[in-house]
Image (cartoon, rainbow, N blue to C red; front, top):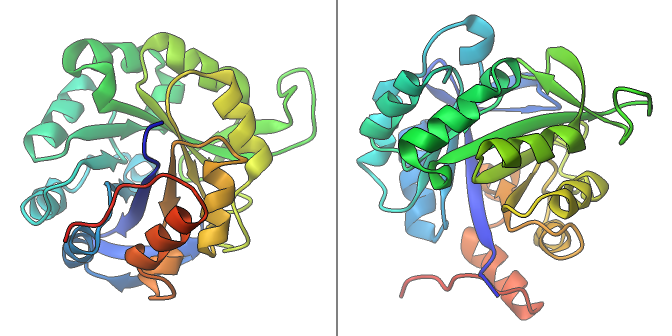
Length: 260
């Protein structure tokens, strides 16, 4: 059994670490470079960095922040936001990232997934999915809809069907974020996470709603996720990564040990 991964998520706006609730009310809370370094030293397995306004503003990602983070850590590092071409992917990888996350651009141009996988390998391509629960209908039979542009644009696309297509096109991993749970600290959306995990064979990262290590255990066991994304609970010092890993290990969930 592969170890489950603990992945702090750094949302960045205008070069600053920021956090909101359900994609609204964001406030700046720190420096992303120094925060990434601290989580690396505390035992994070990977780090994800999202430039949360790049796609909506129609601009490229902040490569200087990517370079700064990459210089401070020695664990896998995924970057998303404003990546709309293979050239953008190449620039991010050359800046020091190991993985690229595409979200809005993949929905608008699905072939980008395959182009990225062909150029850099499926292991480097993570498709991020921002999902909102909606009424079930012909276009959204699962009751979950794909939303892009940082929660601003509903696409009338079923999230489970989109997850399957992403795998077929060459994605190596899916990061499934529930907009309804995002930032609430009330737990992951387990029904959504489980539905995606059951629909594909590639790893699924649970995102949105972590408020305690017990929530993470639920996502990694009942939710079927391979990894859990966390933000608020570590950003605000409620739990350390060591405390989270100790809890998960004591509950029988296999995690990578902290470096001595």
